[in-house]
Amino acid sequence: MPRIVSVWLEHWPVTRLKRAAGARAPDSRDGESSDALPLVVASGEATGLRLVAVDVRARALGLCPGEPLARARARLSTPLAVHPFDPEADAAALERLCLWAKRYGPGVAAFGAAEGRDGLFLDIAGSSHLFGGEAGLVADLARRLAANGLPARIAVAGSPGCAFALARHGAGGLVAPGGEAEALSGLPTIALRIEAAMAADLGRLGLRRIGDLAEAPRAPLARRFGETLIRRLDQALGHRPEPLVALDEALVFSAARGFLDPIGHQAAIVATTKRLLAEIAPRLEAAGLGARGLRLTLHRIDGVVRTLALGLSEPTRCPVQVGRLLDLRLDRLGPALDAGFGFETVRLDIVRTAPIAHRQVTLAGDDGTGAGASGLADALRQRLGRGLLRLTPHQSHVPERAETAEPWRVNDVVARRPVRGRPRPLVLLTRGETAEDMLAPDGPPQLFRWRRRLHRITHADGPERIAGEWWSGPAPTRDYYVVEDEAGRRLWVYRQDPPPAESPPPERAARVAPVIGWFVHGMFA
Figure 1 (spheres, rainbow, N blue to C red):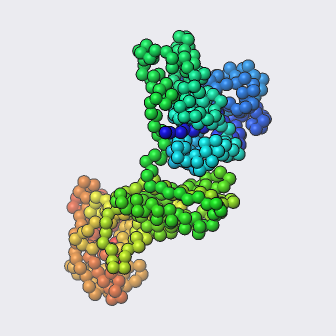
Figure 2 (figure 1 turned 60 degrees about the horizontal axis):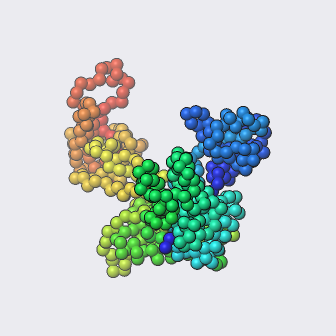
């Protein structure tokens, strides 16, 4: 049987602002410190600014959400500190709080639009005994929220609807299993998460309390107010299931470990993460999957949560590889991790997976530690903390256009150069550099000077003719040769002939580089 905790964070936008910005109002023009002013949050509407949330001092002056800001200022002589409503920042802060609340159980869901987006649900069925029962869990939750400056009202019931109604419109508390109807009977109908207009219409019919609504005939109510009213009533009473859309509900690969003696050293965090992944790896292997994205959540003993995200270029189940990447990330963070007095809980979640193919291993085994380009890219990303560039094939046979540099994203697969009939140099210059004093009598070059060095050619292979892209206009034709000099240097050189179309007029030809001659375009290993 589900047991749901509802946490209502009264005037959440105000609380979030005070925690994030110290209640500094950016548009206060009254010449006073905004810390000493009543704080309100206003949202712009077609009829003007309207209050969304107010703090304790503003409530003491008689202000309430929904009142026009102009009317509030007109009837008060006290200046106000006004902040703009920022629903995106409020939602992001609420999501971080939901991640913190996972210490009480994996099933955590933020309030949606029907609940006002100012609280969260917790499914504590099967986890309350870890905190001494439901009363102990609620007491611990309330204590931690109060210590962090988060005023909240908490209720526990057998359904999300009942728990929400008691937390938002009642006095909170614990409802015994099966006692939802009695607990809800005295609450107003608006507590069922219905629209205010529907609640007003019910009031005009004399149905002001949920108890009155529960005793009324259902058929007339359904015909007049629709199925929504009946569904909300049944959900609150526990007669109809209401599954929570839990945060990261799709996570099926996760593990956590708690410590009586908190840890804080980097080596201990890395070792714990490796053990957690080793615990998850058999389940990943059974599903034929590997981890592409991981999230490490560190719960500090004072309630602060640190979250580290790791992205991998290729799926893996290797604890050694993940431990090495985490070690690089922690090296880069240094004191910024701020372990305080230590972390009491470490949780590892696999947030993104991908199929991992079976591969042949040697007799000595394959440690799968992420060797190759993917492992190098992951290590550089953790160490440097910056985005990487990678070369990706481009549909062009012109050498300098055949590859482009793009940001290396975590979801990308390592790009490999396409197989061509002719070899390509390891180092390709941005554009060809002129080869001087060229000696090439009707064939491959025999002698030339490049970068102040004389190259005597002992072997040459070619030519490979590459014409320009006809759709881009007249372009010269190139004959490429792979040459090797006396010192063993292998270069990629080409002779460029004029384009087949008309040459540019003399006055323009004097201002452009010549298109005829020999050039060095790359170097082989």
